[in-house]
Image (cartoon, rainbow, N blue to C red):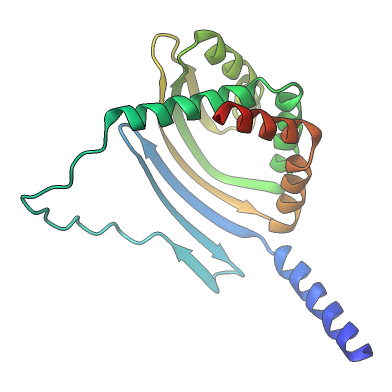
Length: 200
């Protein structure tokens, strides 16, 4: 019994030590008509190095193509996702809690490079203005840290487009603890319930 306890304790200490080692994350994302993401993760000082492989060319399509899915189905899903997103954003206390979480995460993340340009808009201009107001403190903070981040609202159209290139060092132990605290917070739980109700 003592040996089992000692082994479990040693494995726990080893796991905590490994989770305290910084992880280097490189992300490149672009969205116009579709989202394209490339990423690479380096951990344990290069012993672990994984990422997306170059995209292979699409195989030639035969003359007999699959019948197209009804546009109405994709439109319904899009509206459902939009309703869920708006319901989450309108959750009382969520924006303040998200800001506190973001400030905490910034203390555990070392940004080596960040370039971002984005434009977004919702069907309701009021929702667009509300989201932009929530993002403004983060944009100011990013500028104060010398990061190249540009974000503008689109009040006359809906959608999201932009480009992101980032290289960051993350300590998994601190980040996971912060994110778990956010997910289990009362505003986040209320947001999940609101999204579930809006899904119906």
